[in-house]
Image 1 (tube, rainbow, N blue to C red):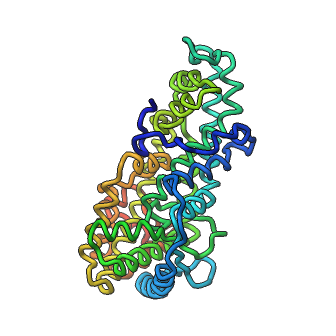
Image 2: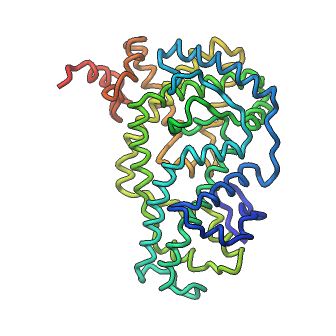
Length: 402
């Protein structure tokens, strides 16, 4: 019986058709077997059930609301809401479509993560003192070479599980503040089924929630579309993703117990991503986290402030919507927290509050001028210490440049 992992109880691979074709599992596609990742991501997102197309009415409503959101966010923030110069388009998708698009959008970051994990996983088995040992069906001396073949498949499984889990919960594409590639343009994705389910579960007006989701998506898109913000955030995310250090003894034990002819042994080995990938943060990653947390806190604090100012005037049920949605994001389950940790993000209430205090502190001291300066260049991005002291930030950015 497999151990429940962070993405829920039960066996996430039960019924997966890919196990019927082992050749696909070991196809060489670089550091990640993307065929495996896509199939598991889609299967997990749809919970193994066929998904229909999104209701055209839902699509049309979001397209109409996109215009409202773009105009209102642009007017309030003074930021360009488009990265490509075209009008923002908000498209309603189902969960499996969102998973496929997100897997493609995150591909450079996930490949960096996979390369780090794959190299370290293989190196971990090369030391005989750290090998599996015992009664493992695979001899210790074979683990290193075997892992070289298995690592892309293993990582494809784990990354597919991560993205599939996100697809079941995300409302839009910026539930995690991770930039999408410029090639994605100005099309923002909203998971229609998740929006409808959340509105029903919390007895919220569906149209109000759709407008809230559109405003939030456009506000994030405007900030993450700024070249210097994107560059700094991607620099930190990629550095963090490349710094994992897996535990060699745990890997040796887990991989050594695989019987290639027994599907159950595969499920036991890979059904719990946290057992394979968790608890691997390195010293270099810990050194990066203050800067990463400072930037993400500032982004989220700015979006929250913008939503309160803009959404509060447009949405009649804004108070109850904001309370429900902000509770939702900090009451994340184990799977959500695991995915956040893999990217080095700590989206806790403490971080949201920290960012909100910083942004409101700027406005209280310096009004609209201060808020307009926040995103003007890389120099104005706050340091970790300044996020906790807006006055220090304002003093520094007004000093003469060297």
